[in-house]
Image (cartoon, rainbow, N blue to C red; front, top):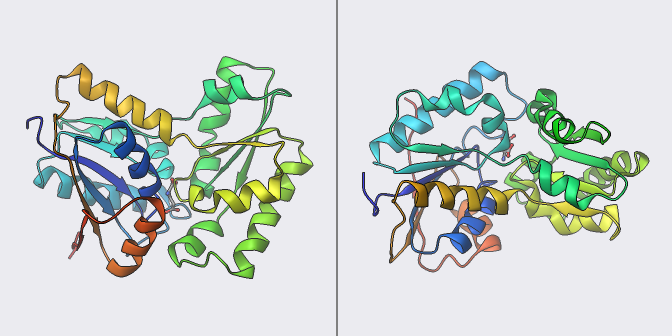
Length: 265
Ligand code: DGL
């Protein structure tokens, strides 16, 4: 492992591309190796054991590629517990930030919404993190299981997506939240629809920025920051063209290499 070794970035599908966009801004000189398990997404409504076995396969694959760090660009996998992923690997693993300090800095009325997969909401990890810092805050978790399949399926202009956005936004508005964290990395793909439905008075927070800063800090700490030139390879387990189109919504893909890889037999 050395400075030139890639940074692995994993997600159940295309959601992690919204984090990769942010990582590229913070770490433009790095070699990134993205792996999205598009064949088996969504993960967020699956049982823990199943998600864990898929994640083990992804990590084994990245180990074979000689990564120097893994960014878990998926809240659901992060909620599994990074200690379950770490095993005895020598590289560093960074999970999605829960954003509690930023949320508490932003909110005026201390009513905070968390939107995420069913798995992430059930974990109550965000609620606990916020309440640990400020027990007087109110945290409303809203599972949004309709979003990931619609985003993976590129249904951005569908009535189904608009209805789902309005349905979830209505629950948040009922609770009078003024700050909402998108704790699923797929959701920034529908950020503008969410913002329109919630109204401009609600601040939407994407924890990708804080996560990217953390990834950079860790690499600096171990002296493994690369000095360029950087590269981006995006791997998926199915749907290469769809992944290309979705990546192009987030960043310039001109120099990206796209590949389909096989994880399980
Ligand atoms: N993008 C993922 C997350 O941040 C998971 C979506 C899914 O596969 O359900 O939780």
